[in-house]
Image 1 (cartoon, rainbow, N blue to C red):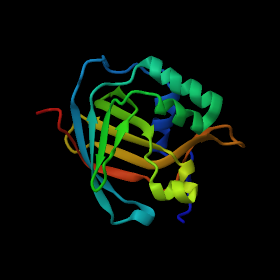
Image 2 (tube, rainbow, N blue to C red):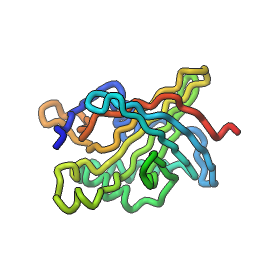
Image 3 (cartoon, rainbow, N blue to C red):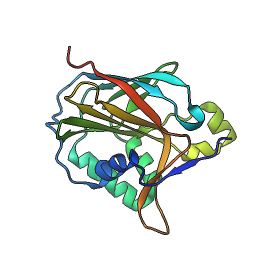
Length: 198
């Protein structure tokens, strides 16, 4: 079994954790109308996944509301990562993540936040648990969340992103800081395209 990699306040995790759940930044206009936004990226393996790649397509029909964000904050405060999982499970799908070779999975929570030269997309959702994991009660079942961030710039070639396919959020007992435990190394997202601009 692959050893879990602990990542606390790494550069790619800080924005996902702090700004997704804790910061009070205002989002770009996020109304309830159907958006049909589409983003494509190539996931590049790092560490033990070095050399592996796959395609990721993010389809967004609508963005999550500040009220839904507060539900997640409250759920995490009350019951930690499992609280997030339970709250996300009750949310209506906002879109879909398609991954090469899989059926993909629905997006439970997504926000669009303005930046100085573009915007960020932040996604948090429950990870599909495979039959094998459930049957063997694998340790990986504790890592039942997936997170994704895209940083899209108006400058050509400056788009970046990260995918955390199997993770859990927790408070470090010593530092009392919020962090992420990954079951695998994060995947770097490159060649990011905004297919919404057709």
